[in-house]
Length: 285
Image 1 (cartoon, helix red, strand yellow):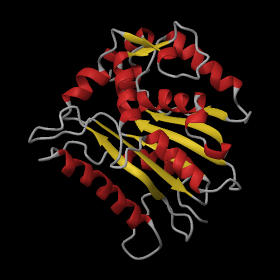
Image 2 (cartoon, one colour):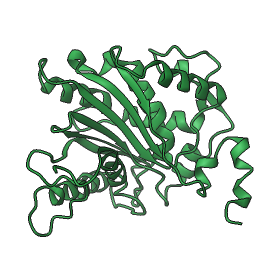
Image 3 (cartoon, helix red, strand yellow):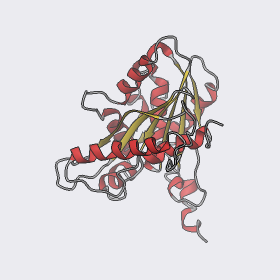
Image 4 (cartoon, one colour):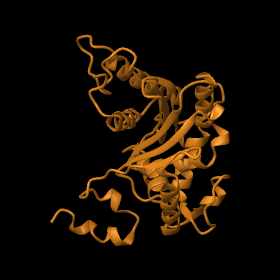
């Protein structure tokens, strides 16, 4: 057996790995940016092979099944010039050749990031129409996402590496490098908590705008794999999202899937729907 974990478990393990800066502060932004990929590369290195000491964190125990760090992970700090730099957002791109699978992994709320808490998590009283976010959308104008979600997604799409590549160009370059005759590929977007709120709109953005990143049209499936995330938008956005999932169960040319996991006694997934938020005071009775 080539992997000890299912594909979904591996996707969620990568989602966890990009939270490497959680709870830490750094003397410079450069130190932060160097730290996160170093930790994740160490995780990937320990996962490869069957040598004594390998932790098989991702379950890749056979030759040719290992995960590769394709890009980043890259970080964003709202205040990068202080002497105590905090990571506010992280996004990375990984690839597994044996599964023809790219994973876009998004970090969750950093416990010591007031920017995460105050802006991306809790700025929900104002909204942004999805039609202003995704050029290729067919959403109605009244389908909106929370301002905090909009800010977080804007940050993720805007993060660049030293060569000026963001997640869109990095994904396009990685797909193009496979060659026009490569097998059909899949892209999975994943994240936990705040990452669980940002995952659905990021996946939808990719699905609706394939011309920006799907080199040679190799990707035939995009999937969202959020865990424990609050809702990113209003009821109109949710209704539109459900229609996209329902209408694209098969590749035509790209399928779109949604796989959501949460703990029923976790208060975070109860937000921001009033019908579920009223349950929060009674979750631990």
